[in-house]
View 1: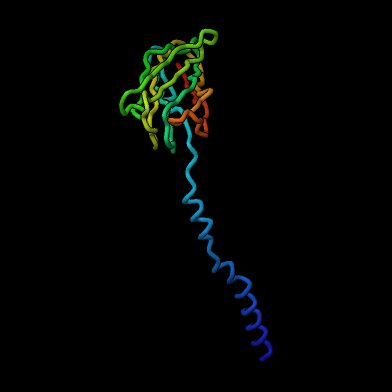
View 2: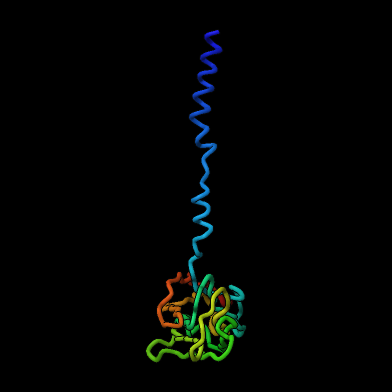
Length: 175
């Protein structure tokens, strides 16, 4: 009889020790994480990571989770010894109406293509995900290279900066 009571007491203690953990709900934490906005980011997407000399590498600059964007500026970094700029154009993200697209090499750094695109006039900002700009780079020299974004900035219609993360450089192999 004593053994039965001890066993019942142990089961009772175990249930009350474990039950709060089993019955607890992290509902608030789950709800908070679901309602917190995702971090805005700008990043590169390459159409491939290996190509031969003379072939074109497609490079897209994308944004994700952005709100109220009026303009985007960045430097596209690549070796001018390894690649030649064969083309550039605005993506669909800021291409709703009138926009201005500019890309030019910085005089003192031929590996730095300075790019800017913005709405024109008193347009409202754009939200969501999409391609900001696309580039075609013609491979000129064999080797391993890196394509990167530098000095990236996203602005709202009041020209205030929007906090964001910048994606990592992308590696490409030219054979």
